[in-house]
Amino acid sequence: MSATFEHVPYERAHLDGVIALCVAEGWPNFPEDPERAHRTLTAPGVTTVVALDGDRVVGFAQVQSDGEIQAHLSSIAVDRSLRRSGVGRELVARAFALAGGIRIDLITDSAEDFYEAFAHRRKEGFRIYPQYTQDDIDNN
Image 1 (spheres, rainbow, N blue to C red):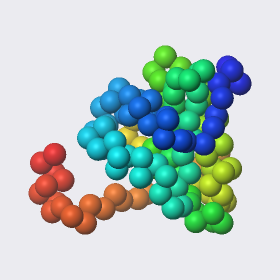
Image 2: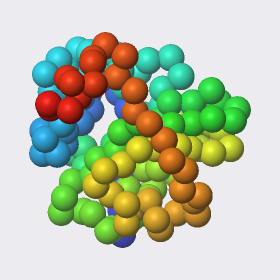
Image 3: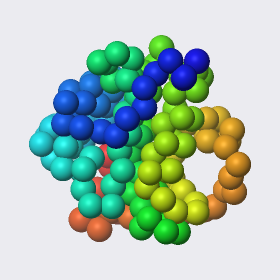
Image 4: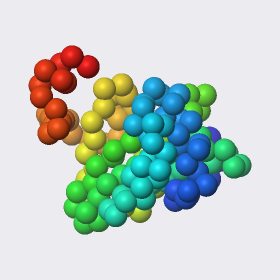
């Protein structure tokens, strides 16, 4: 089904659609400062791809990469009505191909089934918050 959607590099015209997907997911970082979100989506070393249904953004994936070895899937969201349609898989594939690398790492707390469908190896990891104390993290 994803073949009916266009997957293109992110442009500023897509920002409102990306923000809407983040709002639907309950992710505050991009919606609270759209200009910061745009800078994040276009920063050096970042590749962002959007899935379009006509002019409507129905998904996006953001990958950070050194272009040679290591990549990190930082964000991905797909319109809830289009999940399990191939849109997310195609976003990951296109973003990774454009970003470059031989592997892609990610952290998830809600989409294990989606990522299990890719060839993968599980690794233990940490998410470090240098600006906070452990009490800040535990209480939020």
